Length: 500
Ligand SMILES: Cc1cc2nc3c(=O)[nH]c(=O)nc-3n(C[C@H](O)[C@H](O)[C@H](O)COP(=O)(O)OP(=O)(O)OC[C@H]3O[C@@H](n4cnc5c(N)ncnc54)[C@H](O)[C@@H]3O)c2cc1C
Image (tube, rainbow, N blue to C red; front, side, top):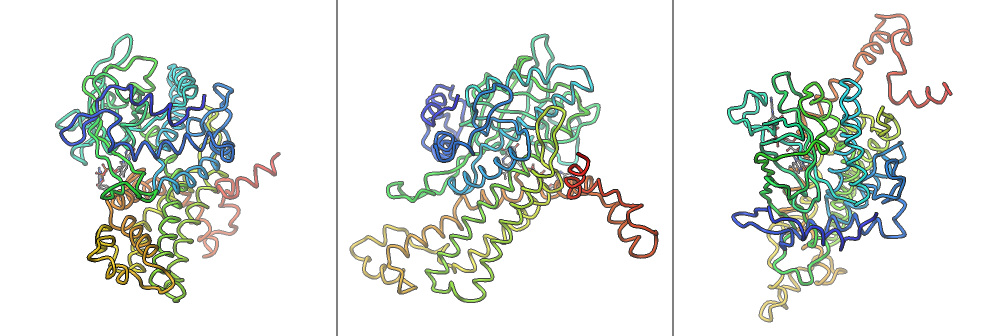
């Protein structure tokens, strides 16, 4: 079934109010959650739109029916590229973050890891997961992913924390399920997700066994509380607000207070050896998703910078033209890394196709490093008005109107009304609460930058590089004796073709 945005919202309204904004307990119809719901609505609209249906839907290998691509487990490189394209397109419409990728990356990771645990331990997590997925796909559900634990003292392992709730953990194992407690944090879209996926955030040791836990519960499940911070491009009033002001996001602390999770929703319960694997599967899949959304953020910043340059009448000035090419470099290099991650990805035992982790990580790393720089490019070109623009009411007040209309014009070819719209967009993009969300999320979303460096230092084939250098430096006779080209992902495709 493909839901409409109206059906999605109707179901949200029926959920129990377990959301806290400040000191208020609210339902899912609270207007401060609406901007985030509007973003998720884009994902339903695209799947209904004849023009985009092919991109936004897929044929499920579980139900054999047509499902929303966000609920689909990728089966080949094409599926991964379609996901990446869909994210870039959706994120442009959302003005930054399309949000539904979190659930997609969680189901990909769980589909792979449950199969691997079963193969190693003889458990039945994968079958449970596929049964769960059937319902998830048939009902076109929205899932968020609660991976980040509150973590307490950063240098202590989960089981060494003074407060055991610093990491979500199993407090009781029962015949029919498990009972869990603990805090997850920074969880995007939780108040308007049907389901919350919980997965580990880090590698575990044997005595962290109770912390190696993965499951899914409805967002309003008994014992779950969402302490939410909604963020959007606030305008003084929403009347005549530009489309970017209608979208937003929310991030939540998710409190699990002795929550019972029935067996059919439990996908890992104590298999500590797989904690790292599941954490990395989600992180790497999510880093691939960033190769879709971060280029979209560059697209939005680039377009806004061009408009600011035009309003300042400096668009033809050489330093501005050079700055604009930097957006192209950032967006398209990261997007290319995502395409390479899809093309050089691999089919796992579960059948789910997984992106190449080197390319997924380098693309994400590049965008994380450049995010503050890209916002800086906009600020440099725009000038200080982004932070000092008077409120829009001053431009219509009888007493001020005439002066303000002259004040706002810089390029004589751009009339006052258009000029004001441009500077309003610049203000929204460079000094709003959403700006901070995009900046900090651009650095930490999908894991802190050091996590990408760790992934690369573990997985990148440094030995091959040393062998190349040894050959060139006369320390070994033939490069090919030392270098197994099959380990290079960019050679692999060619070898696969030759081997057929
Ligand atoms: C906008 C936004 C949206 C997000 N959405 C989600 C979401 O939907 N779901 C989700 O699960 N998470 C989400 N996150 C969380 C994100 O994944 C984390 O912020 C990220 O993994 C970093 O974790 P942290 O914030 O706890 O920072 P920390 O891990 O505390 O990092 C802070 C610093 O401490 C260092 N550090 C941490 N531990 C150690 C250690 N043991 N030894 C040495 N140095 C250490 C880090 O390298 C870093 O420099 C979101 C974050 C943001 C900003």
